[in-house]
Image (cartoon, rainbow, N blue to C red; front, side, top):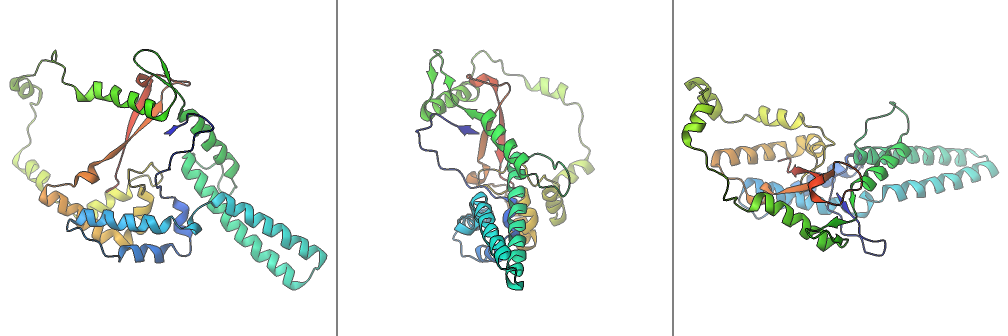
Length: 297
């Protein structure tokens, strides 16, 4: 969700987000292994996983993993220069340089397409075609549609600043979830007894208490759509699916520990609330559909 107030206002810091094209970087596996070998301080297995993901996040934010659009533009200019050299001096050396530069540009363009495809969450138009322009337009259209430029408060006044709109959103959900309605009548236990007539037998109850196996945990994670929006840490299912040979054993152990100890760290229980507009040009909170974005693990 993007909150835009005015052109002169400085853009807010963007949260970290893992992009699938990073796995194609020649140094990605090395950086992943280095981050996973890093020393962390927590004694809780799941917090240790979170700390290692944080270390990986810092490493991925390095210069070579950013500004893919600018890198494509620079490579296109380099290709044009080497093509001019090949035309003026049609030597084997210049033709080989042009071929090599063209291959590098093709790799970057494939990465750019992957980047915009993930951001737009659109399906491929046609296998093998370069759809970067289409995906880029899809991203721009989606950003324009989801940008909140103004909200009205309870008095009907127009609020344009970020802090004011954030306060309106907070008060709206507080009124829905944070206050006990005295008019709500508590249901009796007998009501639920009548409602829940079905009861599990001993064998079924035993099955519910069986611990998860390593294969079950892996199967659930690999059944997820890799390009769906990530949770607060920014790591999508695609990252965990690719990195499973490196991190799978520790992640699985951490998940099983939480079920065995019946204790999940509060920081891992956090979520992001994304507001999706139901109709165009909205100015009231009641017209937004909330979607919770949770941690993958």
